[in-house]
Image (cartoon, rainbow, N blue to C red; front, side, top):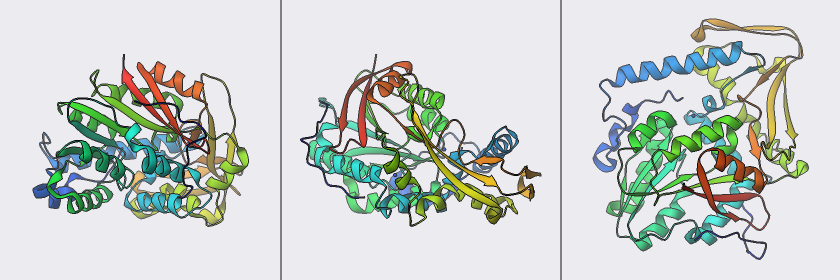
Amino acid sequence: MFSLITSNLCLLRWNIFSCTVCCYSLLSLLDKTNCICNRSQPSKTRRRRKMADEQKQKLVAGLESSPKYIPVSYKYDEIGSRLQKESCEHNHDYYITASELSILQHNVQDIIPDVPNDLTLVDLGSGDCSKTRFVIKELLKRQKTLMYYPLDISGEFLIKAAKSLKDDFGDLLEVHPIASDFIQGMEQLKRIKGVKLVLWIGGIFALPYEDQISKLKLFSTIMTDQCRLVFTAEITQNREDILKAYNDNTGLKRRSNLNGITRLKREEGSMIDLDKFSYHLDFVHNTNPEFMSYVLSYIEANDDVQFPIPGLGKDLEMKKEEHLYLHEGTGLSCKYTLEQLQTIVQKSGLRLAGTLIDKEKHVAFCSCVTG
């Protein structure tokens, strides 16, 4: 059972989606991992083209909006996923990963529901699956084999993680990687029978408020009354700690946040010159139970600028001091009080069954059930 863990918990302090990555990159794993992203797809080429078109539409919509923005999911190609991982693991001021890993190391048994049946593990936004390994190991202490469905928008990153897991766990772990966004992924996951433990680690706080609620609603569609959804949320409210974490001296977070811009150069032929902009971060504190606190991340034009983006068939035009946000919605990385988390879960139609909090009070693992 989940319970509220108070400050007597001894935890270590050490060191976190519309995709274009295609399912063809997973074919080499089919014999070992049984990738399901190609099932029910009449044409991989057609699917790739559709996803690429949808992504371009979202990019154009963001660049034509007021204020302008680049969807945060766009930064998570293979390069961006690697930068995100490095920015979390090698930035000593970034406390979230350290807190998440500490709970997973010392209290993973409290995350897993006590049910009589074998669990199927679903991992939303799985990344390199490094955090999920703790859950996999604990589950394999309780059951002989495990069905595991990691879902991520970066197919190339996912293929490497899935192969590594299969190499390490062998026949004990049946891996079914899904290279997809959440909407398409849920359609595939609805077909999976049995009791599911659904993990969403480090995902909710990168979304706009209404999207957070809608994603939780979406995830509930693959759950029965025996299933459990566990997501992590940042509960830090200290402005100084937050700004140090997201604007570290190493510049790793900055490179990660700016990958959407550099990806436009790589893939769409953008001529955007980052030397013509200044990079900014800010923290906005909000205790309203119906909302959250958040980090803003944007670049500001030093002068009037115009840069062509051939792949999108448009130019980026900005006036001096105009902002281009590196995320949609209100903020990039959201922070919550427990009351705010309770409200979000209730609005999604789920029930918050419990929270697990680290000693430093940086992160909460939130356990949700239906009804």
